[in-house]
Image 1 (cartoon, rainbow over the protein chains, first blue to last red):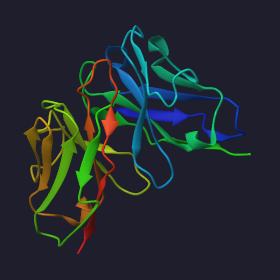
Image 2: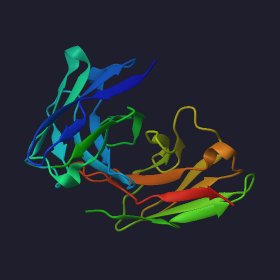
Image 3: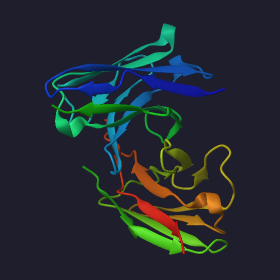
Image 4: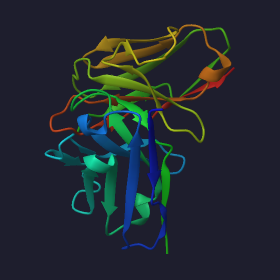
Length: 120
Length: 109
């Protein structure tokens, strides 16, 4: 079964850090670009970051640039998002998602999401 | 930044009828547009990529059209399971700066 499973969410104080993980199965993870997308409570979707299959190319939304770091371990079929200097406005469900084909395409596989709450 | 504007914000349609959702880009994005369906408490599901290509397993009642700045998602005969929020997404930029529309809520009339 093709699947992405996120973990690592939780409650953190402003200025704190969290590391999200995404475990992939059922497809050749090492071939595909991967992404994080977030959704604040009751709001729409916001792209956060993307990484190419080899980790050579990394891209971030301006809202998280300099605070979040995206990485992957193709041997472990895993994707990571290190989130530092967290702000209240980072509160959201965070989804990992696979790019359908190549570097630029829709996202055809999504995880169930992990909730991050930033609050004092 | 490319801005996507979806209309209407809410669309009320009866089961069995046709629904037409619109997405307008602030500049030309060729055919670099995807559509997603999201139900409450669930992750988004890819319906359409390349403006008009249905994703694997998506029923034929879903169709996408358009290019440049004007795009449409049509659901030909609404089923009960189609009532959800729909988002468009562009992936035209390099380097990638994906943006999503604000969503259209499709509700039962």
